[in-house]
Image (cartoon, rainbow, N blue to C red; front, side, top):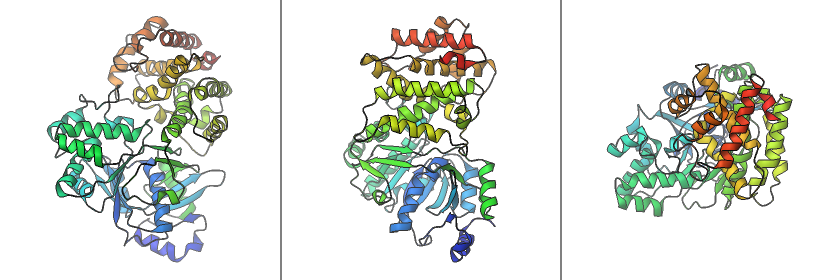
Length: 490
């Protein structure tokens, strides 16, 4: 039974036949699009669209979503053939399931750019959300718009036909200003500190090359609230398709699966019209930075630790790595002694309890999160997740040891990618692989060479003698440990 509107109507007429499957409780056909989401991956569909679905179910409104994927024609075809419907499998001791109807339209930017821009400019579009990963913000190591980025270079010359998400925002906001249409609210949802602030800065910087007046209007009139998002969502695969079919006899070619836990914190600075997210569990706070730092350093920092050192130990999934006693012992020590002390906790949040909840979530064997997926884009993630807490600890005179081991594990991970001629998924892959190709397995020489790569280590740590010495010592331990990297974690 193929999932689509007709199938959904039949299921809604007989809900008792699907006791563990939540169905849309609103009229999809009369729900108009009010949100454009750029970066239609699994996480948006398991997280932000899930919350929008809750709003539609409980409060209604014209908050249908137009999903924009930059290049993924296969996903767009799968979802459009299902009238935008898809299922979420919430993986826990007892799984629960839901069909989401909030997604009304899917466009491929490289094929349907005119339609994408028209949808962004439409007066009915009140909110634009974004999940394009850290590299999609097109920022350099200093957090400024990366003028050497190929997409940005294109957009500087062809803003009417942009290729970057930043360019799409500038082009559509320029047209809305020209037509006298109020701006939409831009909600950045990627794992980046001050994501809204950084995205707004990039948009304004690109806009200035078109019009100083436009840049000023964006700065004064467009809300870019920062956010913190959380729900572990593995990359969808055939197992999710099989699971939905076995449970409900449904052929869903675009399901997503995630853990049952989910959290969304949005900066309380929105003046425009957005869905009633505050009524369905989303936290609006004036201290998003506190939530961001806590989540990025504990959850994402520990994830990166598991990814690099776990792959060195030949583990494939997060839950696999969590069964490695020496690695988990290292994880607890790292978070207790070096990560938690670097965080100024949001009021009322016990960081030790929070970290234990995170680690418990990692142990869920039903959430098959590939370590290689987490290991992607280390050159962007490590500065935020590891270099920042290193700097904060050094500045405060606190212990730093295990964080150096994380950096060393990342370097060793890249070195082995070169040795084994495996693909490295990183925007600076060619540059990093070239550097490690010159390694001689002399720890002091190799680490100094790697850490001197331009714009890899943030300016505030570049050339820091304690960093270089600490990472060198840890990298030497990995070299001595050979194919038993756990020995380097003592």
